[in-house]
Length: 375
Image (cartoon, rainbow, N blue to C red; front, side):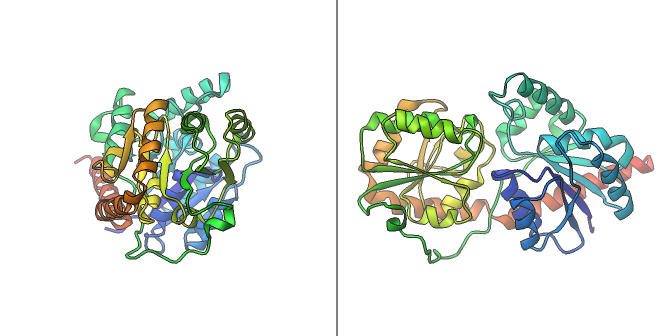
């Protein structure tokens, strides 16, 4: 069965959802997937570079709803079989046009919808309500971890409408050569280098990491913070006030994340909520062990203690202890990273993600067409 799918995302994403969409759609055959964005940016540029058919429906602001009629017209004109949205804005627009499109609507839940607008004041509470309202209208869901499936069920969504499919990437058979060296970032070979790749957002737990690092009083432990976001200036000030300003480097948004992982000793994630983090799969691809909070599908990735550390969410002491152990077991880190790579490349490949996604599309479309015929 050939399925023609329209994917919709706002276009301003800088985290895992952006990588998920671009990597997944790169596997689709020409003419079977189109990507709509509402703003041009790195996501659209990466998608075009990957050979994906990208359509820009530009907005003057996020409140510009003139794109809705254009979206409906596009769906009707090009006879898409399925609408697949990603993120709160795309989900809201999907809810607003649902009655006009007469095709199944699916969404991928990349984050906990109750926490997407964490610490955003009254606007955040309003956007959260809109987000949850929109999700109630969706026909079928992809959850990128069992925990997210459970979160959707807590919102009253039936289990049979949710398919859990873990994220995946293309893993390299052998380590690639990398241009970036420690000296380029002012790092010494004796430093324990920790890479944290995440949006600078409250939900990612940077402040907790800074507190844990400060508690260790180890000047040779260095933290590379990769990513941008609304907390940039606040976190820089936090690092300085915590006395670790010389140990933390803010590298901003980077396209050479693989190079940064390659020169690091361990990857770290301290999120309060997460799906199935692509950033950690990318770390595994570079044979890097991982320290992570117990969120999303992390326990499926770090399947045993010889691949990394899983710590309770929000537990500064446990996070500090894991960092301390990584320092004391530095001679074991490469072996741990290789074990993680072997496990991840076997269970979380991009090909598996694509095949399971296509199988779900076909199943959903078959159900929809049967119901439409009244069988």
